Amino acid sequence: MRLRNLSVRFAKNERDNIDDKQLMTLREIVASWFAADDRKIAQALKDGLLVEVKHVQEGKNEPPPD
Image (cartoon, rainbow, N blue to C red):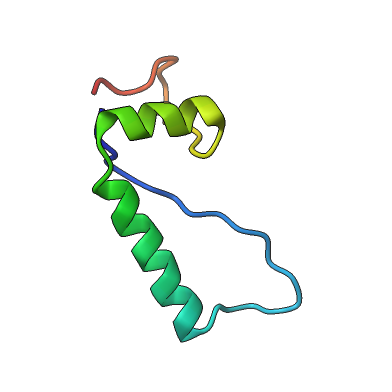
C-alpha cells in the first residue's frame, strides 16, 4: 500500500495563505508520509490520522483500478 496522492486539508481562519515556515512544515509532513511503510500507513488509516478518498470516474459507479 503506497500513497499515490496526498491531500493536506486544514481549516482556514482569518488568513488566506500560509507563511513560508508553515509551507516548509507541511512539505516535511508530506515527505514523511510518502516515505512511510505499509504498516505505518495501515495504522494511520485505522487510527483516523489518514482518510482514504476514492475517486469515482465520471459515468462509472466504481473507483478506477489500482
